[in-house]
Length: 213
Image 1: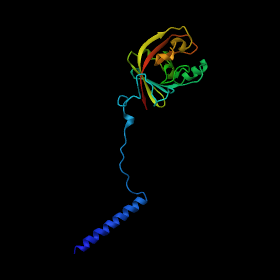
Image 2: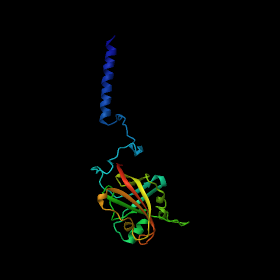
Image 3: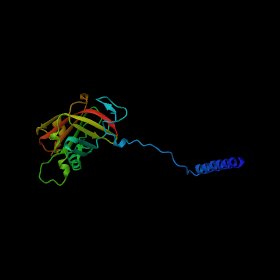
């Protein structure tokens, strides 16, 4: 009587093995569960900086800025990178947001990254990019500013805000950027037009670190 259950069990095991082999051949076996890291929701504080302080990083190359954010004043603007320093080219680029002055440093390089944006206090402004830097004068010492390249976030901390007098026609002349031996830093400047000698608010921020995206 025991022979029938044993024979049945052997038959079942053989059929089960053949079925599994067939499913494997046609790629119909269920895939094992995969765990996905939710890195997209990690905050800047939760991920380690690629660079701390002013040290160089082999992991992140110097890059062009594409976005600037200052949370305390609600600033979040695109940054364009024209190759020409002509007044016409720079004024045209400012119509789309803020602009990195072509003669200034790249993100991650020694020296100053100079980013310029329009400010306007007219009651009616159709192109809101004319108000891009309206509120940078409200930044305080210690406020955070982040500038993004395509690959990384560059974190800066405000160290000074001042009003530059109308003695020169370009932001670079107003700011008088020091030589590259003075470290990495960010300068934000307001302007009406690159050709106009108008007073400008100037924000200087020291480099804190860079975080890979």
